[in-house]
Length: 324
Image (tube, rainbow, N blue to C red; front, side):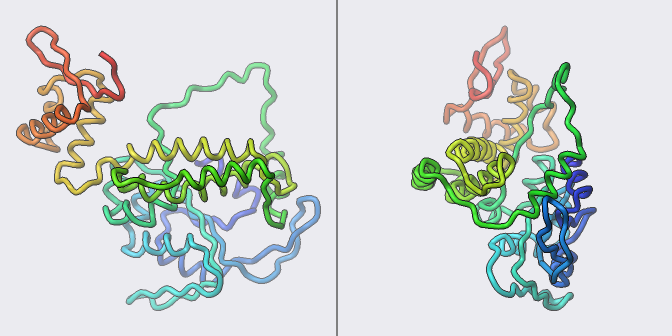
């Protein structure tokens, strides 16, 4: 996150609100507006012309931002709709804000367990998760070998951002890209047995892919044309997010043991094989031995865990991550 934000700040192409902001502060800043820059020439900024209610919210601790106000998730869902006209929002303590055509984006980071605790269950099955792309990082990236490769010039990246920010117009799709979008759109229907987060996200996968395709197309050319390759790359990335979503919010459910069950899954994914005693020894603060028996029995009957006998011990493993 930090390198990307650093480039944006240096380029000056986004109204960035960060450093532990609250939703009330965001609404106040949007209602006052930010100076709008007129298009320049060859990437050079133009003159300040009027105000705009556009901002990028940055939170390195997303769970803190979400829980700082009871209005955060509701406001974000409404603001992301980017409805034309005046957006009105009022609170008992702060009064009413009038925001003209808001355009808001969010870049945040959080540990998985803190995120699940900070997002209410009804928001997981509602509009919030439908509008957010949750990217799950489970492994550290290896340091790439840059031997013999030219180093990226940050100043060139900054100039590219400034040039892109001045481009105006509407995107169009090639015939092949349009055909692919229609096929993908028709495939984005949830079924009755999708989990809450996946079901609502599935309905908007085509829209998220379209937005990402615009970014990919813009990074390639300034002709505002989305090629089939751009859209296919975007679809692949969105599908990766959809897979991650099942993991991110699998601790959310109507069962009282949903969170504890997720902890057992993550423990088995990390350890590979573990006995009942191992699981309990490392997780006794989170569930009792009798609750663990219920969890193991549920996983066993559903076929999600396997068993392996080693001596006089029974070892359990999560079938999706380990093969005996």
